[in-house]
Image (cartoon, rainbow, N blue to C red; front, side, top):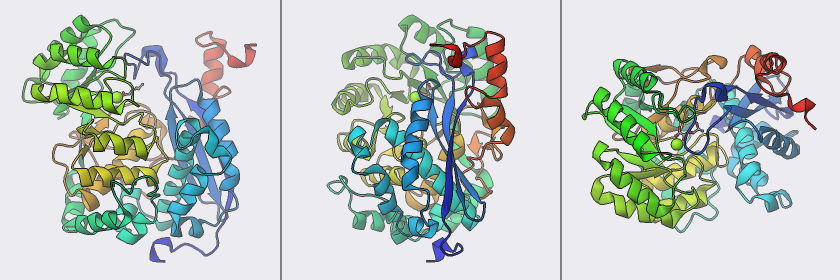
Length: 457
Ligand SMILES: C[C@H](O)[C@@H](O)CC(=O)C(=O)O
Ligand SMILES: [Mg+2]
């Protein structure tokens, strides 16, 4: 098949996984009402084939617990090592199901939790490898696949009451119209993004000075959409939103994110107080599993002009299906390092397309911006055909550790041109931040900045 023009019968000879952690909790970078001390981390997978070529993939974590995801990757690796890559790519959906439905491992999911995070890291590495084999960035690889080849990557099990393979094919065929023109536009100006840079909490101290500086900085950089974390203290939220609105003005877009802290009614009441700041959406107002709760919040906030966004911790395509079916979210936030990696995420894009819901991906965590830009660009070029009212999240964190970091100019992600999924870490980043014996960690343990887990009983 033309999309698998690789040397015949190349086998996967090894799968390595590392626990990489960055000490972001020191400055509460990325903190929110629920996650107050995140150390941005990932389980980093390297898949090597017989030629020596490597594919890299990752799944994002917040520090503790990464070792559990690493162990799950190791457990799944026997299903990957020894496989012929051309066989995987010819029938990727079947291979995907072999990981997610292995008859004993399935019991500790199914298709959710740690095993699914591990699946995502492996699957993402396979897409990076595929892009490198074909010498294409993943967005272009996806856009160049024939619709039949693309649907062969997807497991439609449990989705057919909302979308069938045949309907997906039809959407993809329609999506190709005008593709070349959109590719040119994408290569010229990139894809729009919003920033959460001024939106984090810092140990619950309102750092008005820092918020002011960051909001101004990103406004000057050309950003037109800004997101703030909310949900701990209503008075603080009002003060921070007031400040940011004063800086960015009322013609810019503002979103807020509660990271799951509220009860359903509490979310409605709290947002009624924040409606004066005209937020486009409230993100993760309550439990990420509560479809009907989100639907209730959506209904209550609609008259206030506020939509509901969720998805960054949605466990799989089935739950996404229900959120979309129930009009529980008006903004669908896929996350490139969650659910079962690229293949399952494609099915969410297809359902969102069919049901007319905008996809505005979550990003910002380690490698998330690097990966998700490809998916949204594919959607723009080959599926929805529009970026109208859609944004990808952007936060400037940990990009310097990647060989080909994401490139944002004038509030747009520029289209990646290098082969693969932009998921390869620089060797020195791995040496410094592998946990617990990377150079940076050893130094922080020696200084007493963090306690050494190897010395704990
Ligand atoms: C813990 C993460 O940084 C989370 O707060 C990210 C998030 O909710 C977002 O970027 O959206
Ligand atoms: Mg969020």
